[in-house]
Image: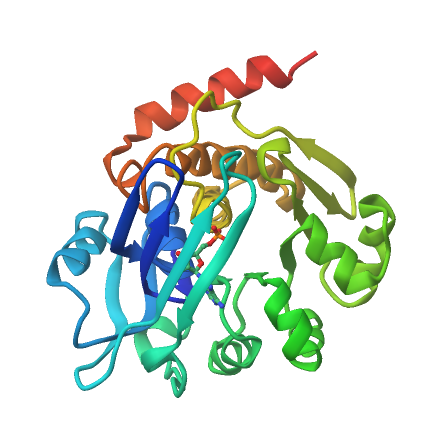
Length: 301
Ligand code: AMP
């Protein structure tokens, strides 16, 4: 079944201790849609300005990502994010965020997207996530991602969104911020009370935890020796997870979500091995399958 991904379509300027790369294809929706496309037909909703290079549209197309929902505002500038990593590659600092055309974006869901069964609201303002959901015709499964910024400046909208989605994905510090609970495991029931039946807490290189009506599932991250650029890893994780989930025709949501999380973690590992989407876009299904088998081995006991 198909997946609709809405989020930021951006130009990212990324600085690591070793290199600086300006104006790469980035944004939560770009990473998530490319990751999802490995497993399921994927439609993208986003907005870009007149400065968005045609070669990036070609990259979406290379992955068969449907760009019918990508708006072009010729007179405006594409959302631009720049960030810098410290030596350990875990800590990053946002240098600048220029909203550009995203600032006044009121997305209108194309008619042919309205019945998409799987909806991924990748990281973007929760007002936009709610607005897109308003236009969808009873999707089968809705996943939302968020970030600390929205918990700080738009908490009411986040809380409204939580009542409408099936699954929330957030990182451990955001879970603590949302619940005012220091212990991540204790934060989980509090998040369920806010709405979602499924909650996934990302712990970066230490993997993730799924909490569902069937209990907890602790998933590993793929053990990487070298991280080149982790930008977009979280988006690739949730995109790969959603694409895999939508590809499953049988089995319970709980069982499929567990396997989907492993596939998301593997796509995220490829993302970390290159700048932007450089390695993700060169990855094959066979390479993904090989890493999934490796993860099965390292995590089984
Ligand atoms: P991640 O590394 O998974 O947290 O995602 C990084 C991506 O998020 C980059 O490609 C950025 O373009 C995008 N991004 C940065 N700031 C924001 C924001 N405020 N809202 C949505 N996306 C953002």
